[in-house]
Length: 238
Length: 184
Image (cartoon, rainbow over all chains, first blue to last red; front, side):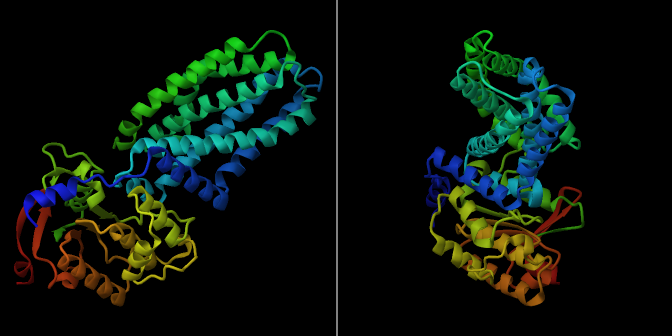
């Protein structure tokens, strides 16, 4: 084969699959791995359960309402941090991440896949924990339920998208379990404040969470875009 | 064939060609194309198997094949058969022996018929018969036009197959020449 023909063959783009399809392949793979190992979900569930039970001893059922927003998000925030570390640790075992990096698939598809996979797991955890909050804290929503669901969805996305990014950043550090909360928590404080305030407002019916929802939506858009644009650099940093 | 003592930089060189490590200076071209843009034409096998323990052999290959836009199971089954593995094996690879993982890792590196194959110790943990089988597979690929760059301490297996050797020491190229020189 002549040199030009060889060069042309080498340059031919091989990835004809759409970006969303590639991202979905990553989501499906992550969910399948989790279904078989259950190492992420079990640790998340256990941690959230411990928080719910321990705090239920500290508060009377009727006096916990003012702190409920904070309590709910403490459980989910720390459970999520655990999950995010695990989800990347799986990619380091057997060096699998290198196999992805040498493939022609875009790094962003891996990021989006991981974010969506983690979002599904954390949302599932929230759905399973909601009845326990009702039972242990006599939880009822005075405000509209759709607002609570929206705060939960946007808050979870904000945590997961930042968490997945910073977990990828800390993946090669020696103390990655410590590194992730150190990086994630300070940068997530504005979102966490909105999540807690918004949740408390819906549960108590005091005030409207619309401002918090708008803030969370903006936070999600800005940080999703920034993480998305920077991910390839983070992935290839040695 | 890349040769050199432990720590000479053989694996690092392979990783740089594969685009996993940045060279401190210069650039790497594969058939005139920067290595990061020629990934679909490259196969890479490392020390580690680069496979998910929780998936079966076929599931692993299917996942990685999709990253190369390959959706045909036939191609993957053929790759597994070429390395001496049964494509119908449903066991998760966490339960595979080291040798089987090594062979599956090779199947992962070759399923898309790369024009450049980078192999880091392909014969480690493999029994002598399987090593011969892999050497034969590499000979077939070489005959069909694939360029193979490999690191091995078992040079004897490739004595008749390799064209050229490159000797590294402390990250420097010490010598290179026809394979016959090594045998002498």
